Image (cartoon, rainbow, N blue to C red; front, side):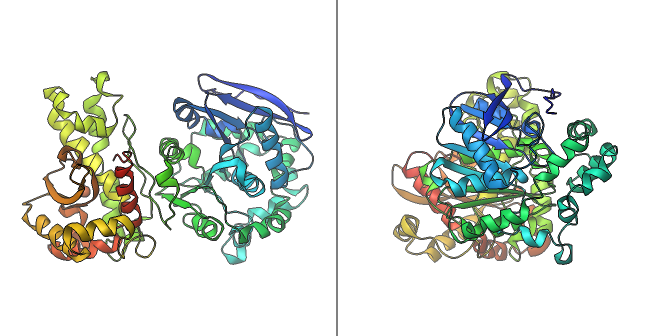
Length: 523
Ligand SMILES: [Fe+2]
């Protein structure tokens, strides 16, 4: 029996539909209009896992297509066909039946395996690929399936025919409650109502067996995907993982099989990213999907992706690397405190803008550049909190772990520009250090590019005044507040300033310069 279950909440302007594809009937939710994006859920979930993410994509002019995978939710409980290549064909036939021949593809968990299989089989039909918290067959999954290699027990348990469904049937609330709690980054990251919703959807022998069907093909999936592991996907790929789940392993596995990989590890996040961190994931998706040709054409081992701001409510952006990743230059505890505790400017900024709906549609760039037009009673607050948000957003992005984008020297146009304006890279660093030393108290030091003069220049601001107030776009900036370095470097600010160059992400800074030349670079 196939059940069409009413989800508790359907986002506005989204509707459920059915389609007959690849020999089965799929349920899918659709909304918005524009270029298509397909989001694939994981186990034990349905399209509903994406409910807090899809409105932002529709609002950015996308046709958003969110299927229930074969066997899940309202889709047919097929007795077979759970191989990821076959499921990719399910989704491809759905996409083509809706009149689209090229899509952006996002997949979480099992859905990520299906998305990857789709991209491998039809690379010309996938514009961009986003993989969210999983390990892929032939690219890191095998050790994760082996408890003797620090993997998880559940693969073997789920893969034995008829075992798991026989034991769990009638105990679904207990099992799924335990399952979600073990996999969340924080115990309250998902509501108990949401967990019970999934327990109800997967309840019963047939639904449980269909869910475990996704696992029972994994050995075949590994065999199938092995040849693809030695090739490189041509499209830009974004890897998003929870720090308390697969973490850096997702990007580590993908690196040899991709030509343009960007990676984000969300601090303190567990496995269920679309529901644990929907706002951050929405931002990451929007920013990645809207990258222009400049951003999409260049690869870097670790690559921050924010190139433009979004309107309020402003949110703390995720670090594009782990807290400890910048060691030994900046220690993990400093990064944890700096990012999680000091970058709280967004809350005060949102509060200040609360009574001013006329300002709430502005990006942080527009808000800073239009500071003179902000009502006087909140102008200082917006200047300080908005500046702090903008500066730190830039700061996280222009750093990368040493050897993974961080450190070394600029190349290409950026290197030529530095040499032309400062004589050498060392000349620029010396001027940067000198300007920073002259800034009394807390503030920021920036490397700017003046598009009119075609020259680089160095400037500082006091307190949290934004680089956006300087009238020229910033390529990079360093935080001169003691909270940025004091735990490790204490009162030795010059030592910190000198060491900091080992974490400057020159490939990304070079992209920022290219973006300015193209008239596209914002924050
Ligand atoms: Fe700071």
